[in-house]
Image (cartoon, rainbow, N blue to C red; front, top):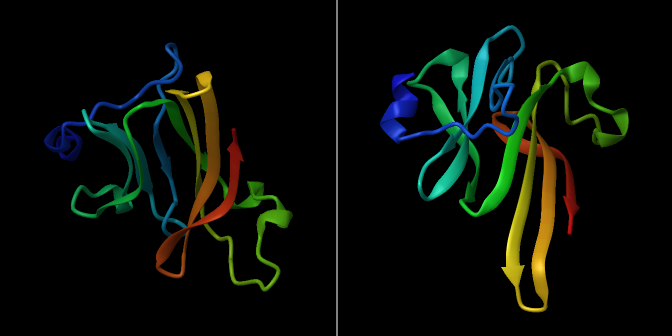
Length: 139
């Protein structure tokens, strides 16, 4: 896609035999086909969402500076969301897909030869903005 080439994107592949980190789903509204892509450049990796598959409607919804070990994304359908993740006030109406994001980090730090952490979250577009429905951090 020209929009990815213009940005200088490379798409990180976590599994050698299976292509990943380019996903399709109804991320912005039910019945619409959107694409989400991880775009890696020399400085950072961004999670891009192409509304209705259009390069004119691309939004960056998350980013990490390069230095992490691995980042992967997958589609999470509305019926796969655990009920305990949803706000009790009913402010989140699940009628389309979300994006599950998982990033692993490895780095050197004083007192720690090799430190590791991971962050998993589910991103969902609701009431005109992206928000985290669930977040897990492992150190």
